Length: 165
Image 1 (cartoon, rainbow, N blue to C red):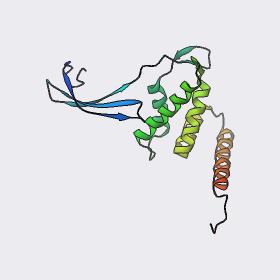
Image 2 (spheres, helix red, strand yellow):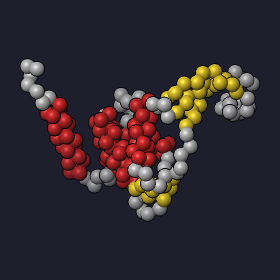
Image 3 (tube, rainbow, N blue to C red):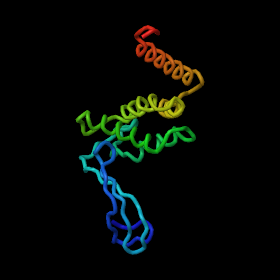
Image 4 (cartoon, rainbow, N blue to C red):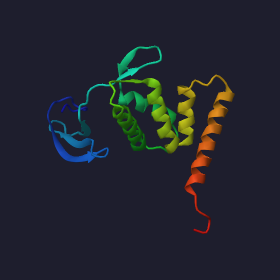
């Protein structure tokens, strides 16, 4: 593995452990040349999934691109990078679970919004505002009202018993 510090190709593994629910191996490495320590991740290489964009063009699914969108939406929010990476992993799992070689970008956006709605309301609204391209405040208000109604319905259904239970 090439050292990101001195660019030499001589490192040794110090520690190895499973990550991302066992789908990834996290390795701590140390450069034998300069002593710099760094982390690498090893995952199974899977067949590519093509994303069909709004304009009809296709590009390969990119975890990094999904993560960048989530990072922008969750900026200055109490959401950790680990939380964001878990969202990306769940979205990728949903995409791959379809069994299709191609998926529409709008479906990926919906998966991301489902996950963000569970993680952080503000990050969800920020992502939705870009993804859904609200034309005015009415579109934004409608989205907020739907989100609040869903939260109320979820709270009502989870408190199905009486207050004395």
